[in-house]
Amino acid sequence: MLPGSSRPPAAPVLELRGIRFGWPGAGPALKGCDLLIPRPGLWMLVGRNGSGKSSLLRLIAGLVQPEAGSIDHRARCALVFQNPDHQLLLPSCGSELLLAIDPGLKQQEREHRLQSALAQVGLAGLAERPIHTLSGGQKQRLAIAASLASDSELLLLDEPTALLDPESQREVLALIRALTQRPDQPLTALWITHRLEELQQCDGAALMRDGQVGPWRTGAELIASLTSP
Ligand SMILES: Nc1ncnc2c1ncn2[C@@H]1O[C@H](COP(=O)(O)OP(=O)(O)OP(=O)(O)O)[C@@H](O)[C@H]1O
Ligand SMILES: [Mg+2]
View 1: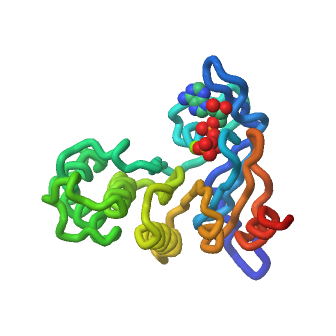
View 2: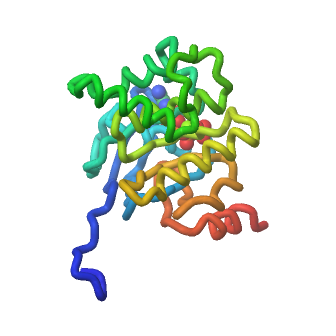
């Protein structure tokens, strides 16, 4: 129980313990990896190429299974990739979002979800717009809208700004920041980046090295440790 509180502490959003995993034909990518996300917010991972960041997100998303260890989360999760062209499949914004929405919902609720998801990412009114006419930043925001439409609470973002210009980069980061701070059902975002300046915006930052995640630190602390001679 927290001091002065009558409520028990909330369970962590995500907890990984002792994860071991290797891709077929390759050496181990994750080597006894632990990770605990204590609460909703914007959590960032950095690490050298090949340190296991993308493999970790794929395990959390359930696309591959660990050889050992446990992954514990109750949240529905969605992956957002570096290149939105790799995940947007349909011709128009609206049809793309409908694909993400639970088909069991009533038509009216599906339409509401679609419009709400577009509005939350700043694409209101673009349901009919062909996806190929969107800018890179708009496509990335549409990919995030699809996560919202699918009712995901844990967003796994793998270098989502790597292909964007500085303005779109700031927009996408600000959008995710706002979604993780919204008073009603704040989301949890696990965000991988090579852009150190993005760490300034996070609630916690950790370094991934050789298949393991280090402790959470503030973004400023991690930047300082990575840039000090
Ligand atoms: N689909 C795959 N098949 C075989 N090996 C893979 C596959 N994906 C990743 N690997 C290997 O797993 C290890 C970890 O790669 P991973 O992509 O997780 O690293 P990363 O930290 O995301 O790197 P980067 O910063 O370059 O994106 C690497 O040795 C890589 O070659
Ligand atoms: Mg990667």
